[in-house]
Image (cartoon, rainbow over all chains, first blue to last red; front, side, top):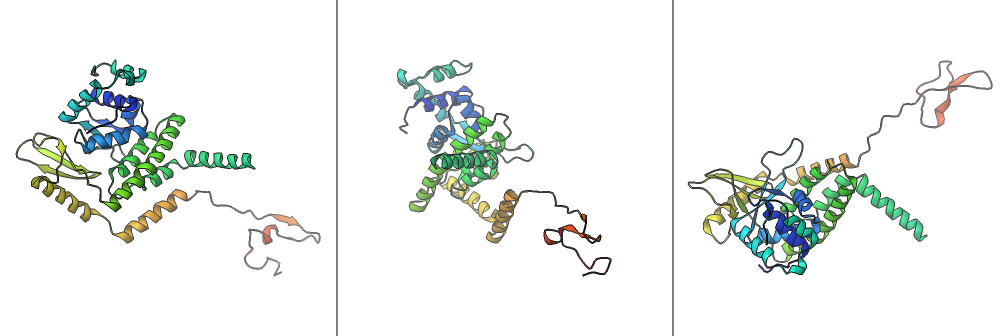
Length: 109
Length: 202
């Protein structure tokens, strides 16, 4: 998959790699990456179609609320996102992205 | 005139985003074709976002989501109509030898002989194709009949648009007449008197 490397996508990739084994909700991920839904969901759909992510639905949702959809990185996805971040040009690494990279547990590209 | 239009537009936007956010998001979710996982995801996320205290964040999320639904949903419908979008099924592990296969909220639980890896199902693989077929059959069996769904949709539409008001109570007001007699005041408006007056007058 030849994906565009925009600042928003880099931020999402960094946020996904922040906790590779944990599950991520859409809204939580967008807050963590500081990216809006308009940029995030198309990228997630691309990753999902390529098999870099798996999705699922909350097993026991809170009372009165429907089950949320979660995303989790696959092994191939983790490798792909590391390459995705590493091969990003330095000019594309925004201040926001740098801030995310400095969080504990994130991967240095 | 333009100022007036702008005001009305602003008021309409404020009403839509402020007074009927749930309705708008549910409507936006309907733009996605049937069975699209974003339909259920959007509504579920909306329930979560609605609990936020920051109104500005809610508005921002809503406006962006609605714009995305228009952009993505119409494209997805066109794709589905023209060439048929391939459905993505994923297998998600929940234990050493059990797995959940999901596509949207529809899901099947399976027990495998060996640990099932977390992956996207491949329709070209025969085993995967059989699993996809099973979940499709389950979804078809679980779907409600069309008249029932229409009635349910109508019920929710009415419930969403209905404004609950307290029942109006009319009070009988006695107004002195020039001839000294009393009669119901509101006879010509909302109050209708039943039967003749105690005095026998019609």
